[in-house]
Image (cartoon, rainbow, N blue to C red; front, side, top):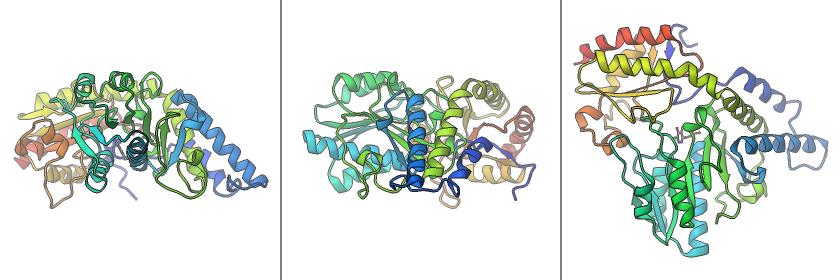
Amino acid sequence: MMSNNLSYFDYAATTPVDQRVLDTMLPFFRENFGNPSSIHQYGQHAEGAVENARASIAHYLNCRPGEVIFTSGGTESDNLALRGVAFGMRQQRGSNHILIPPAEHHAVLRTAHHLAKYHSFDLEYLPVNEYGLTTANDVAERLRPTTAIVSVMYANNEIGTINPIAEIGAVCRNNGIPFHTDAVQAAAYLPVDCQSLNVDLLSLGSHKFYGPKGMGVLYVRKGVPFIPQQTGGSQEMGLRAGTSNLPYIAGFARAFELAHIERELRTEIVRPLRDRLIGRILEEIPQSQLTGHPHLRLPNHASFVFEGVNGNDLLMHLDLAGFACSSGSACKTGNPEPSEVLTTIGLSRDWALGSLRLTLGSESNLAQVDQLLECLPHIIQGLR
Ligand SMILES: *Cc1c(COP(=O)(O)O)cnc(C)c1O
């Protein structure tokens, strides 16, 4: 068991499953366990539950149920979006150009690399500014008639910056180019209306908003050129084969519904705590900087760099002091390479190595925040 005086500051990495979500999932493991593809009543029951979940998710995404594809998580959704459309656009229009910012999550970044390396797509990077933000104008200047897909994340998991997705989407739409956004991190706090965001594809993963791990959704607008990447049965409108993961689908739908209903309430709880962290840390710790945008950022997200501090050592000391935090990237102990996102936004190695990401959520409170604020300056001073 985890020590009960450990404070969790890593909700951007994952969140605990909400009890209400778990209660929704449990009956689908034993009582209502049918295969939705079966003809008999077990199957009909299960199919009804899958389609109810799909309709509910479509309602909150403001799209048609037939445009909601269930996947095994945010990573698969990102992979499927890029590969499905890149190959679809190549087949239909001969397109071969992929446009993404270099600050994307690895699930997008490495998929685009892979498409370039093994399938000879022409990968071009969009610029990002000092906050990791990409503008609609940056996209407009680089779109080509042969662009197969543009992908820009809604909110950055590492530095919290929110991109102008609706504006970028409008530019792509006016040029008839498919546009994908990775909304995996954003969906916990920002509205994900596929119409007002002007997106053709949108990725979600339920464990970032109190749903189960290993469960995702990809929104695919009807009519977008798309070639399935996993073949087999005709589940998911023929776009993603495999027996439906019913308990997790029901869990996703419940978690997504709760995220929508409770969005303002959740935001009001975390935002003042985030602002307190940012204000006090920048004030009290010398040679510290906020990373990401000062106000166009997720309401639960505070991220920093400290000059001349080893980020891994900082995380270990914080853990020993009772605070579970992150550096923001998946950097491994013993391999202290600075995060690509932090070097992309122009930070030198000496700053970028000392990164700290503090993300808040359901169990966060003022006492935990103040304990962390009490400890952090001493730990950093000790490490320097
Ligand atoms: C967590 C995350 C992913 C990966 O989602 P998984 O469900 O963990 O596979 C992709 N993109 C972003 C922005 C994320 O935060």
